Image (cartoon, rainbow, N blue to C red; front, side, top):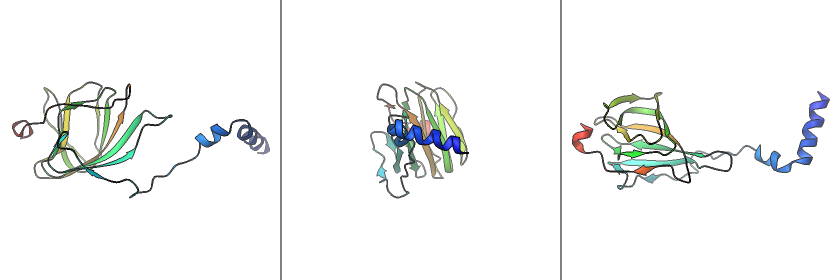
Length: 153
């Protein structure tokens, strides 16, 4: 038991930056401001709350996105892909050329790099998800055209 303590103490003395890198950081609920989803990227009422940003140890950022019934993202792609974790409600995801897929709380969706897709709530239900999106060369998304009402139905 004594030996590991000696090793840890030595590492702390020799590498203070390593010890600092191992310090937990807590971002309390309510400390991050939500914003209205931009009409340039979303149709309908959408709220976006940032959760974390890329940093020197992690190239991904994440946000919680809340869609009112009928709200949806525009078509878009991600240069390094994206993971969506549905946290509440019922929604749809669709890859260009594919069928709409209904998603519910607990479902996890992987959008591969460069795959054109959209996601949002169904017409009669709200839906929330956490989006985890890595960056590639400083970019995490390429926004495209809106999803039409015909495509949404």
